[in-house]
Image (cartoon, rainbow, N blue to C red; front, side, top):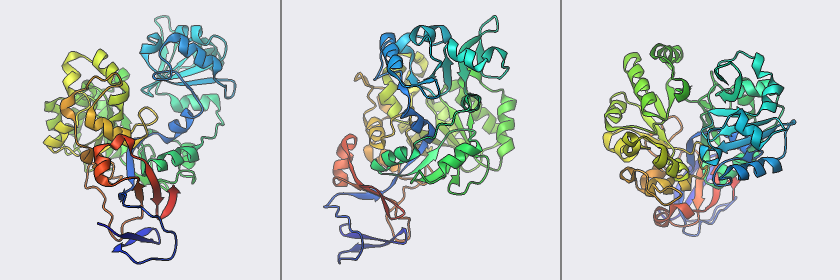
Amino acid sequence: MVGDVLLGDGVIVELGASRARAGTVIDCAGAAVIPGLHDHHCHLLAMAAALDSVHCGPPAVRDAAGMQRALAAGSTRGGWLRGIGYDESVAGVLDRHVLDRLAPNTPTRVQHRSGALWVLNSAAIDALDLAGVGVEGIGRDAAGHPTGELWRLDGWLRDRLGDDWVPDLAAVSRTLAGYGITGVTDATPELDGDAVRRLTGGAVQQRLCLLGASGAVEGASLGPFKIVVADHALPSWDALAAQIRAVRPRPVALHSVTRVSLVLILAVLGEVGSVRGDRIEHAAVAPPELVGQLRELGLTVVTQPSLVAARGADYLDRTDAEDLEHLWPWRRLDEAGVPVGCSSDAPYGDADPWASIASAVNRRAADGRTVNGGERVSATRALSAYLTRPLDPGGRPRQIVPGEPADLAVLDRPLRRVIDDPASVRVRATLIGGRVAAQ
């Protein structure tokens, strides 16, 4: 279609008009106008925290000496150093003793790139008095001494620290708007009241869907309930079944990054029963027989292609041989009829959706090797998975038609050129509810 898109009262009013109208005019100069993109899985507060943290992994840091320099140059908050993005390629398996050598004096906590683990040095362990705390998720050695590992204890750690940090969610929102993103699904589990208030307080311009809220929230839609099936401590069949039953009839969003966790999830859902809206976050390893079960149960997969680009070399070098050809599937999901939505997992993946789309097309690691190239999809397909509605991530892409919300991305080129080279797309303007959020 060539012509105008007329907006009014936050919705699309008319298409194809060519006569001048009063009000704000954006000249697209022949470039594409598409529905705004929706990131179906990200972590907004962690994205804001990343702006105020020391990066401790590739590409910024690649060895122990580099990490030591980065921590030494980092600024403290409340007397603590906060590092993110650690990978074992930097200094091996991280524990209190390794971190003591890299940051010996200042209480320091470093998050693993997965987001599941914090590691503390001895100064931090002493500051928190971990030796006297009996909380599940605190790593201990054979003698019962804290190792510095804190598994999925973000909320506990925040409360223990009494952290009064105010996240710059407005900066995160501006960045996302610059990519053409008009909606986000925050996939952080177990959001407490303070986190929900911060997310819905007005700093985030995008339409917001929450997976981690326990009840209806003003200013956001409520998505499936997030349940982390943690690989370091897999729940029992009964425990996972009880978790799912406890939130029914609400759908669930189940985190799975290994074959074992996916097998468990599918077995439990096969017994408990699935409902419309149930989804698997990541499905990072999914052999054909499990893909068939995903289809039979009517599940949606929300995938993160940028992780193939960022971590592909590690996947190729560290993944069990039997799982290599099943890493981060997409094409086989499409062929089996399993709905697929696209997302970033930012800050653990790249927040730029165009980078994710490019990665879905080329499946290349940073070192140039291909990761499971048979799972490539077209740029058109990958883009469509960013255009679906927040509560239907694998469904029909939204269209620019009268009556739809005026959530739009104005690109810098025609759509055919976007498809040819998605990695270099620039967004000229983003509108949310008809208001310019980025230009």
